[in-house]
Image 1 (cartoon, rainbow, N blue to C red):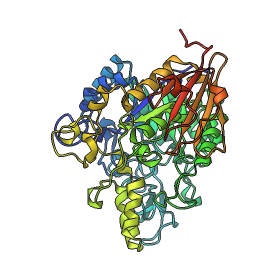
Image 2 (image 1 turned 45 degrees about the vertical axis):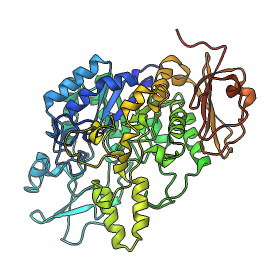
Image 3 (image 1 turned 180 degrees about the horizontal axis):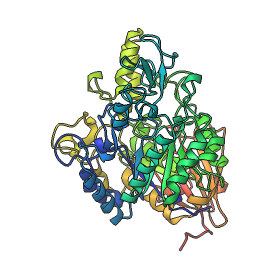
Length: 548
């Protein structure tokens, strides 16, 4: 099964706007990333997934592209991008670009032309419907609120947008659109891109008349053509963002024959702490047994017939240590536990910038948030009569800006992110939580992630071992094994601050302790009968050796 470089890789996601500013304008940029490549090489990652850096009016922080083949000037130039490719390659790090193929900016030259007339060659690059002002074709709503249809009076037509009004959806039914996108991808491959993350890719085959936005009838036909025309011409990592993925579809997406992608991001576990049938802002406690069931289902159902991406965080999600850990009394222990739990599984792990430091959520005033989704939600819910305290609690828990506060490099002004005024406020805890402090401390969260990354390189079983969930009904403990013909791993994680009895004592007594998030060096610690709060352990069977 192990044939591709990305099956052994660990990927690090960078949100460029918030990573490192090199020119004092308060916004992270490509040269800032280049300055920090040695830090990432020290961590041990194999590739960087770079959130969008193509030219964009930044209505949705770069996910509204106005030119696919130019770099947004706030991030730098095309020359800077090519230097990033070269400097990363020197450190054996590949650059995974973020492509937005479902929609463009309304400032893209295609859309500017499309609005000129119905007979314009670019008109059919987008999704239009005739209508009357004030009477959209149907009642579909955009993800960021409001109608999914926008009236253009000079054409007496509506265009369709699933996201911001400034993000018109592309018409993938038009083969000319597809060809333009393929040529652009091939161009980036020649420039040096090591792969692509495909934004909301399961929405490209939409049928708005039938109110179908996800998993449209021609989706896999389109994806297989995309792969044939582009990805299969190089040795790339490709990952699709697919909120509508289930096991059956994921097997198509990540088929080992490479007919679509290397893997997909599926989000079944991510929605567990929201109320059934409601929005992500409608909170409920995490159903722990369900989390075990879902993660285990994906582990077993894709074994030898697909591939998992492993993640807790990204630019759209809150910080995991604040979400499902304890970012106060057991901040370090719970951050390490969540890391070990995830990195012990089969798939390609993704680390979101600052996750390796245990960066936490923030609680700002509403005026300090920059995200369009947060601002729209706040306005809508206040107009609907929600209690402001409840609205703010939802934002504290789930707001996307939790992930977008500047990277915390050191305890100097603005956490070492910028000499200027940062585009968004820095988390006030940067003096305690920062890379400089943790790199000096061998017991830090940073060094724990570094060990996990190295273990994946040293132990083949972490890449190809079969997964088995243990103790599925235990209310505190997440335990599983990974086993191949040479090695057997046992992972035991106490998910909460309780102190349950140490299970599986017969299982682990003949095993070597590989990693623990407490000081487990002493023999009496190794054979403890209870687990400490958020304690996590990884064992390997003694008779199995690491690979040469």
